[in-house]
Each structure stands twice: as C-alpha cells, then as structure tokens.
Image 1 (cartoon, rainbow, N blue to C red):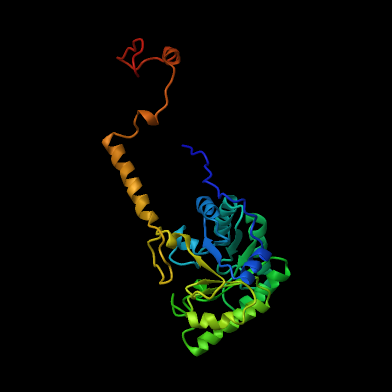
Image 2: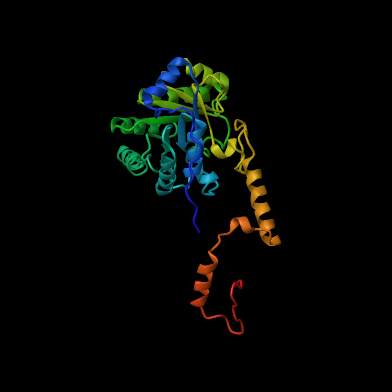
Length: 307
C-alpha cells in the first residue's frame, strides 16, 4: 500500500523564513505573532500553508497524538520523532520544541545535551522549557551554549500536579508575584520569548509592562505579543479535556469520522471500488498473461474471458 506525497497549495506570497530578529520586529511594530502546535508532517504542512509565524512541537503531543493521559510520560526519543516529521513539513515558520519532563532538570549538562539533540537530530530553531526556579538556570546554560530558549510560566503542564491540577495560575497576589518573578527571571536568563499560560488577563497586562521580549499567550488575555493554541484543540480533533481558552475554529474530527464511516458503508455495500478506481490492462497483454498460467482445477479460460 502506498500513497504519493502531496504538497498542499502554497501561499501566494513567497515568505522569508521567520527568524529571531523578525519576531522581535513584530513585537516592536505591535504586529501579533501567530503560533500553533504541530506534531507530524501533515499538520506542519497545514501550518506552513496557513501562514503562521511559529510552530511548537509541544509535549502536548503526548496526549493528542501518542495517547498518554498527561505530558509527563513522553520521552526525548518520542519528541524527536515528532519534531523531525514537523521539520520536514516546514519552510517558513520558526520551529520550537518542548524539552520533555525529566530531560533537563537534573543539571546544566543534561539540559544542554538534550537541547543539542533537538537541534542536531530534528533541526529545530529553538527549545522551550517550563517554569522558573531551577529551570531559569537551565535556560541560561542552554542560551550560553548557543541555543535559543523560549520560557513558559503560569500553568506549566509538566508540573500541574504540584500546582493543584490543570487550573489557572496567578489568581492570588502571591501567586501573581510568583508568575511575575518567573517571567522576569527567564527574561534575564536570555530567553528570546516567553509563553504565558492560563493566568488572569489583568496579571498578564501588568507583567507585559515589564517585558522586553515577545510574549506568547495561551489563556492569558489579549495584551500579549501573540497567541498559541494546540492544533487538535482549535480544529476539533482531540476529545480529551478542552481548556476554557481553547476556541474551536473547525470540527475536523466530525468530518473525519463521517468520511471513514461513508467509506466503510460503501465497502460493505460493494459499491467501492467502482470502475473509475481500478486500473486496466490491454486485452492482448491480458491474453498473453493468461497463456502463462495454469487455470484452476475445473475451469477453462476462453478467449477474452474475464478471470
């Protein structure tokens, strides 16, 4: 069974690859940055043609693609497979990959080695890591090693249990200060960008006054420099928990189920495949082919007779 690769319609404009200076310029001009997750070649092609600015190979793929019940179990090897597939589907967007849980916390050396694998083996442009605290030092070490880092504060799914579950963060004065401190520490560590996830819009507004790098929001209001959503959430593919901030822009899974159901019905009814879905052979070639075969017991093939 084979399927010929097909490239979707390309954008009408020949966009240049998005770079770190280009992202900084967008922030300076007040031009919103569009980011989306992708986990394979087809989703990367969709992101490319749709003209987004950034693509994240998120560890959310552990749940949306690999079927885990959280982001924690996914391994570096699994994430690299996803990132390599996405890289092959992208030409223009800036590509970021999550470092999975347990792959960077132990030491600066571990963090650098893991980040280098994503750059060398998957061709990503940058990596992303979650929360403040020890992650700030790891971010600094990776940046010093020459690899761009995107930070992530607020709701950090890798440590959601310690935060009380998948819930908004920064909803008390102390927690808002904690999120602010994490964001500023990551900025000081050299992160080129930071994701704000699931924090009150008013808190994000206050932090934004102190930010000097592009901030990408996901459930953090409209004052951030850009927005990111999970591919499977925005397209209505994933059936799992859907957070409040995940607006559905399409119902792709419903269409997928309808298509597969229609296919199954036609196969069972004998209406697929039809003549237009089959290949022909020259009658003379068919006769020569039959002449080389021994007919099944009790059957004699006549001239022009169908097998």
